[in-house]
Amino acid sequence: MESLLEPAEGSAGEVAAITFGIPDITPALDLKEYYWQLAESLQYECGVSSSASIRSDDGKLLEAGGAAGSMVKSSPQIKDIGEMKALVSSLQKELAELEKINGELEEQVDINKALYGEEIADLEYTVDEMKHQESELQLEMKEQCEDYKELLQEKMARDMEITAYRGLVEEEERRWCIL
Image 1 (tube, rainbow, N blue to C red):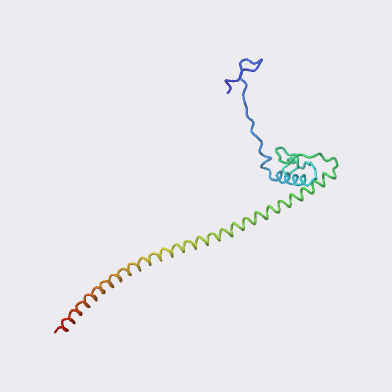
Image 2 (cartoon, rainbow, N blue to C red):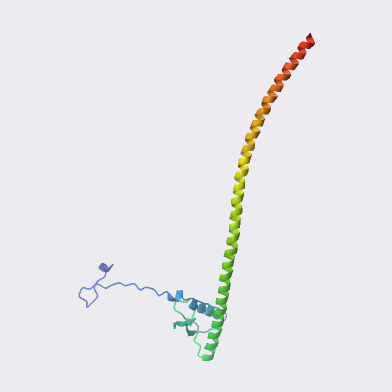
């Protein structure tokens, strides 16, 4: 790419260097800023317009409604300090409520994971037991089928003996009747 670039005017054959900047993703990782943006968007959607800057615990300047890379549209500046303090106070309350709800939801997720994990374990144990019972029943059925085959063979042999004996008895009776 550098070979395609021509030297800048007034330079002694030097080729311009291309540098790519690394995007700053810290605003996307800052949870408090996300909550501030969310609170501002909720306020803005309801018709309350505000823009406030607040220092966080680590000294960063957080802006509600005007943060860089924010999905929240900026709104007109508030001139009155009282309004700004009221807005900051309400946003902090809303943030606290959202953090509380987030904590409760995370607890509920953990409880559900534990509950459903136990239920899944119980069901898997039940399935394993049923598979074991099925294999035992199949083995028992196979043994019974073999026993029934033996009994059927014995029955057929006895039926053939009975038929042969009847034939002999009938022949003997005929012979005695003729005499």
